[in-house]
Amino acid sequence: MKLKLITLVSLFALGFALNAHAGAVADADTDLVPDQYDNCDGVANGPGELSNQVDSDLDGYGNACDADYVDAGFAVNVADFAIFLAAFQGGPTTVTDHDGDGATAVSDFAVFLAAFQAPVGSQVGPSGLACAGVTNPCVP
Ligand SMILES: [Ca+2]
Ligand SMILES: [Ca+2]
Ligand SMILES: [Ca+2]
Ligand SMILES: [Ca+2]
Image (cartoon, rainbow, N blue to C red):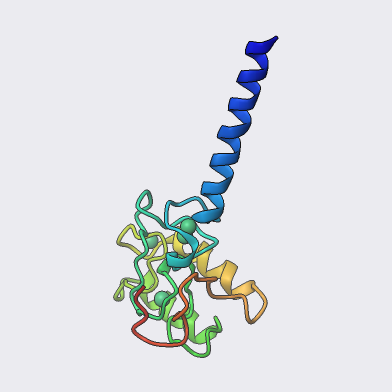
């Protein structure tokens, strides 16, 4: 009985410690990049992914969550689609490569389309960087 109580207390202490740790270093998308340094807070784009925090246009929003290629007020519109289409058809691939595999392909179009269909104001990001959309270049 006493042993069980000790085990229970130990487990509680461990859980408490883990909770405290999670509170100190929040990482909402569990990509190992803490929220405040994560240029895509809601998309896994950490060291385990090819898109690892790459931000080609340096606006503070990682390529993984930034389909606003012409930086027109952080809205994703037909101007951005034109750039995507050009890249898809063999044009330069940088900002349009959302998953970081070096090509602009169907997987990247899925990211573009989701952003295009999202309500204006939530099409880009969110980014944890305070300078995102404020200063360019925005580097943590
Ligand atoms: Ca993260
Ligand atoms: Ca992320
Ligand atoms: Ca960007
Ligand atoms: Ca790609």
